[in-house]
Structure formats: structure tokens, C-alpha cells
Image 1 (tube, one colour):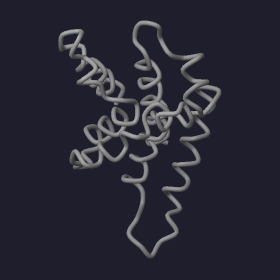
Image 2 (image 1 turned 180 degrees about the vertical axis):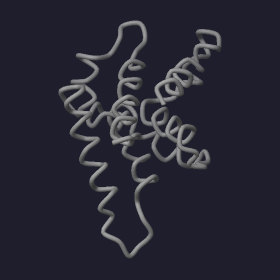
Image 3 (image 1 turned 45 degrees about the vertical axis):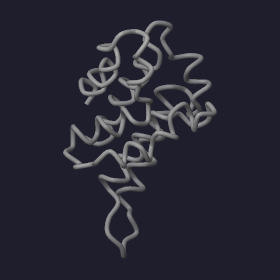
Image 4 (image 1 turned 30 degrees about the vertical axis):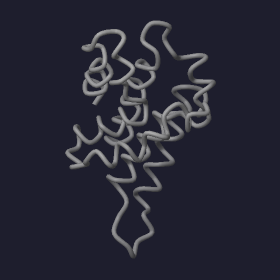
Length: 140
């Protein structure tokens, strides 16, 4: 999945510098788009629009958008039709949050950006590492 994240991160760079902000996808969008492509979830643009506000930690540097986008993917992959207790979804969610926090030392965007954001690549390395954590959890 990290190859898909890398490809999606670089898509905006294919445009002239002054137009790149128009093609930017945030951390939450990238994670959900990558999961959609990797796991053939069959999502349409409405799903990506729905997680757009999660980027940048709800646009306020609170909970990391990469974490939130990945959790949206876990919800889509593991939430069952009702009636159910959704035990598998809960297990994968808890496991992913714990592994993410261990990887980055925090869950909040501000802290993660301060310690893991690249001067030249922005949060691209965070998204790639989040994809690696996601894969470990899904494959466990």
C-alpha cells in the first residue's frame, strides 16, 4: 500500500508549482484512497470528500489525518451488517491506534508534524509510514 501512497503523494507534483495546491490531497484522503485501491473497496468520490475535513487533524492540528483516514478504511473493511458486536473491527481499530502511536509517539497532528514532517516533502513520509503500519495490522 505504501507504493500507492507514494504515487498519490506525487500526483500534485505533476502540475506547475503555482497550480499544485489545487491538486493537493490531504493525509486522510490519501490513506482512504490508497486503501480503496489496494483492497478494491469500490469507493466513489463522496467517501474521499467525507474524510477531507479530517486532514490536518480536523484542520486544527488535533488527531492526525493519516490516522483518521486509515481508521475510515478499517471501518469500511471490517464493520459488519447489524446485528453484530463488530468485534473484528474493534480489534483492528485498537491494534492500529496502538501501533500508530508506537510508530509516531503521538496521535495528534501538531506533535507528529513537529517530529516527523519533512521540510521538503511535507507529511509524505508520515503517510508512507502510516501505510506500513496499516499493512502490518491488516495482515496480522
